[in-house]
Image (cartoon, rainbow, N blue to C red; front, side, top):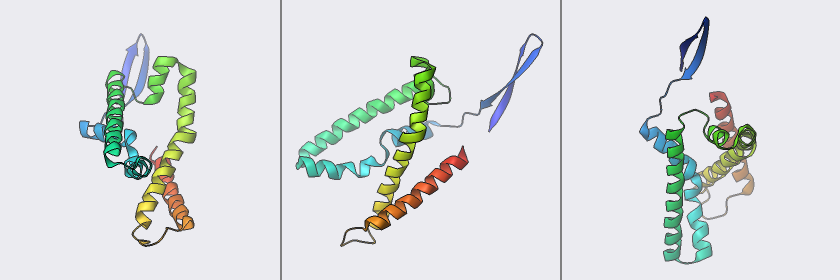
Length: 163
């Protein structure tokens, strides 16, 4: 996983653990697309069409949102190549604004943003899993919530054990 580098400074030997770089261009693009677009791409068209009531206007909104997301992905890609350190947003905010805002962002991501994103993905996934089971009627809320909770727990368990 990592390798050790030895640096000599006077009579003191210091060993640093360095993470092996394994992410290819394809992996990087997949990560950025997953972060920026996410699973909302499967839910948002329905809401947009219901509110706008025009296919043409919804396509214009879709294109504008796609351009916006592409610009966000390009910003993340540029930050990743400019600051090639592990830590993601934490490192970027630390470099730009200091330790305290980076620490606050890290904990907000850990306690709110990541679990909410996983919960939303779990709800969307369970909706798509249960829709073929209930093709002609509404999906029971209890079943949807139970399946989403199971998926959420599986994601959270997998996320914690891989760290």
